[in-house]
Length: 51
Image (cartoon, rainbow, N blue to C red; front, side):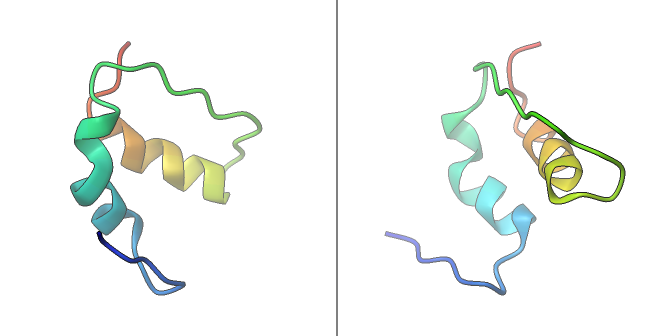
């Protein structure tokens, strides 16, 4: 099992778990420019979720 910590980058999380969301719908509420949600959205999009 992979362990993550405060220094783990989003890219690493997506490389590890990205196939788990491929083809699935992901809902992120409240993203605003420069927020954690906005960055998460960009990283999650690289895992090819359902459109």
